[in-house]
Image 1 (tube, one colour):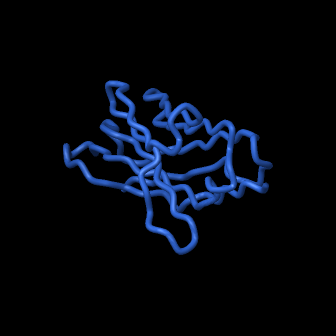
Image 2 (cartoon, rainbow, N blue to C red):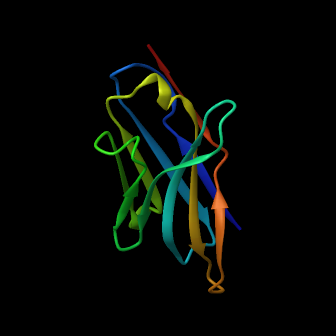
Length: 120
């Protein structure tokens, strides 16, 4: 079994910064892709950023130039550095990863989410 645990959310003023972390634990052979999604009240869940094992990154247009996704493969940990935060960034942020376990089966796992609130 694999677990993902996010941390680092909180309340911040507009223009501020937060850094989210996502620690993967359990029967992990490798992490292929790690992504961050967010869901604001009354809105659909949207992809914020994604990073592959090789380090290729993808960002939603709304966060380009402000957010940076990274990972430490040795620690099975992913990060989302969020700068110049705006009230519209307020949402629950979820970490997800495509994890290959020791039996060479790859599955998609999700964390429980962490709340980010940006005040104006």
